[in-house]
Image 1 (cartoon, rainbow, N blue to C red):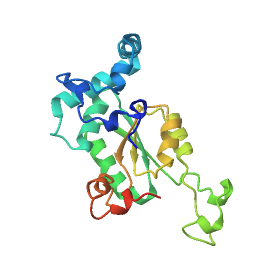
Image 2 (image 1 turned 90 degrees about the vertical axis):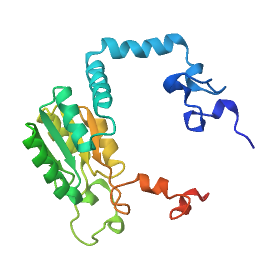
Image 3 (image 1 turned 180 degrees about the horizontal axis):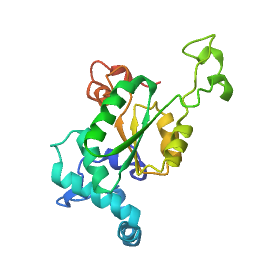
Length: 216
């Protein structure tokens, strides 16, 4: 059965006319369903909200000058400087400490002030928040929980200007972003199976990872 037009979204579109407006918007286009008042209301935020304006203009500047030329590490450094960020918070997974240390070294060389907080900060046992022994990776002993809220709190206390996620687990990253006072971006999205390249599962979904397309 074909999807109702009202259920279709941007991921069903093959026109992408919203980029250059050289074609015709599809009937279900979310842009055309917006009123001009709604569009203008959001546009005004970029103009009148100093924080939104600062972040948006810097992002567009980096994209315009360096698109396809810089690594993400370099983009983050350029962006941090473009928004006037000096204190850079690093929310890192314990399993990616070596990567975090290399990144911190690079930030220092580039004149920035990194402050790293590991995911196991506080060293509280997983059982303290109700996680059963059978769900521990190391059963029968102390196993510290990941503590993204405390990571965010410490970086907030340090008054970081910009926070970087280095390999936090799915969900832990969500909590960190929710509780961070400073803007957040991700350097590494953890994917142990694919060498921290989660997009590889999408690229190989027609062959190696066919199971992703199997209905449950």
